[in-house]
Image (cartoon, rainbow, N blue to C red; front, side):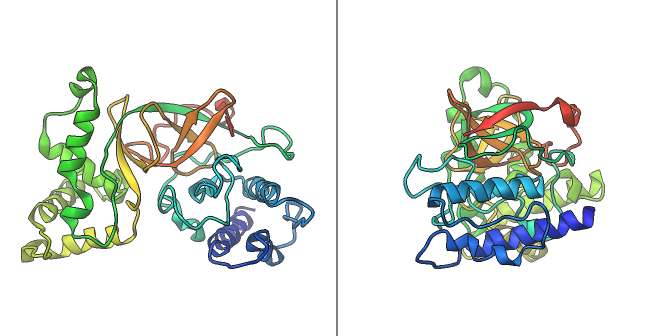
Length: 328
């Protein structure tokens, strides 16, 4: 059964990726053209050309969530051509411009997952899905954003211009209130290491031991500090500098910014996030999510990386104890 679910997720991943690349005179064909490749099952998505484009995209997005018990589509939400025309959680296959950069769970196409923030909890349909503009989901609020770096990151730049750790820390420090600023550590080296790990979406689990972690992080930091615009890195740091460049080449930082939370942890999220946005774990999403509270519910801003919360180790609630979030 687990194997079947994995195959289903892989198919959906391919479908979601390729649909953005397709040109079609009818916007519904961008996604409906791939539905013929589904494996027959009771949750098979049926194209309906009687629906308006917005309704079709909503129904298909809902169906993908329901059939996969996953919220991975939230990493592909890129905004709409007409703001407000689609709910924030619905994928708009007409829009190619990213609003949150590459998804953190980009390896949806693989059976191997780098992160598991929701501790394996799957999305369960809360109410019967109909043509509504909301998606009810379960999860927990972890914290809120108290400061956002003004530095927006891009790929294909030398390390020191790509990561801009000094600028990130200065920007966050300036945006913090005096009482929150006091909570930032004074150990500059430790702050540098934390920001470097956040910018590369690395986590404790990638290291074999605490010694390996400290050794690797120290080398990454030295490589960053010794880099310049001409990539004149001292020979002893060449291999780790290449590793950093390879990580940056994955564009995980593309169009993202570093944020600081009310619980003293850093994270990496979409450039559109703001102070007071929430940081949550939603069941079915293998990475944390940033929602923005509105009167009618929660507007999705995007996925994020959040220190210490990427592997489900700290999930303290049972699956049926998740709070309700109504995504709009």
